[in-house]
Amino acid sequence: MDVDFFAPSFTANPYAELARLRQHSPIAWSARLNAWVVTGHHEVQRMLKDHRLSSARTEIYTRGVPECARGDAEAYTGFLDRWLLFRDGASHRGLRAPAVRAVKPQRLHWVRSTAIETVQELASNLVGRTEFDLMADFAERFVLRTIARIIGIPSEDIPAFAAWSQGGFLLDGTGEVSAEAVRTAQRNVASIRSYLQELVEKRRALPQDDLLSTIAAEFTASGVSQEETIANCINIVVGSHETTKYLIGNAALALLEHPGQLAVLHEQPELLPGAVDELIRFDGSFFSVIRRCGEPAEFSGVRMEPGQYVFCMLNAANRDPERFELADQLVVTRRDAGHLGFGQGPHFCIGAGIGRILTEVALQVLVPLLTRFRVAGEPLDWLPSLSLRGLRSLQLTSR
Figure (cartoon, rainbow, N blue to C red):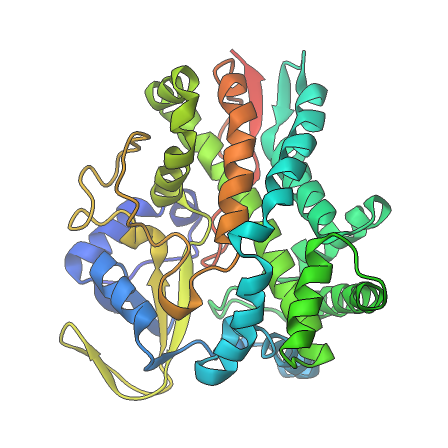
């Protein structure tokens, strides 16, 4: 069987279709994607750890681009090729090690304090309001301002940085790419690269007590080139911004749609740290991870050939009843944190700690607020993507 991954109905609620696909076969060929689609928890977990499936896959993001935009496509993928996200083996380890040192838990003390300060400012703006857009008025501003502060981006530059971030990384590897989409992505990537290059050079000359200075110092000490340093600063910063923003929106919607679970967190806020992992499992923002088969490989009796792409559906794996009891239910007291919402293996998300902290701090404010609000209307405005799952808008009105 095949699934129309581009249908609005799938974007709005992919889980029923993914469950049917998993029941049919946890590893299935999709003619629509011209790739393997993997939906079982065991299978996804195994593949994310298998060296035969390569992360060097940037060409898929401009697959099918018209010839008139080929130059922009090559420039775009050439820049992404420098990201540790798209590296394997020793090359990946050489970039990942300094990145991990830069964001290790002992160095994230300022993330929580900055997040708390930022969320309090935004919460005061929501007092007395009877309606608001949770994404535009809260999630986007909260994550962007917090990330900007811990990175050291001046407040006056935040609007431009947000536009570049949102416009540069929407190609998701599904083959549905136009010349204009590629040109827009390349234009925004060039802008954010130029901006961060100047900022990194300033931090190298005069380090500050911010994450950008720490990242630049760690990469420099490890002998990483200037170009790769800038590229991976963007990898970390943009990745943390986009995924966390959507995770907060997904978590808020899940709680609004499960008022009993919202009430549990309202009455027992000490459950929030564990509940964050359950909310990630239930409807995380990392929807899928793409791999490219580098050599012949067989998984669960399915043979894959070199050059074939594999979509590891993280959210489908996190709803696999073979791995989780009551897999399709939100249970905020669940203590089984075996989800794959941040990936698995050598490419486990470097920014997972930042994402967890920001989501927890956001929910500390949102949980009591959400008890007084409801979703204003349907249909919901979902981002049309197979890489990320998130709401572009979530209009709320008081009960």
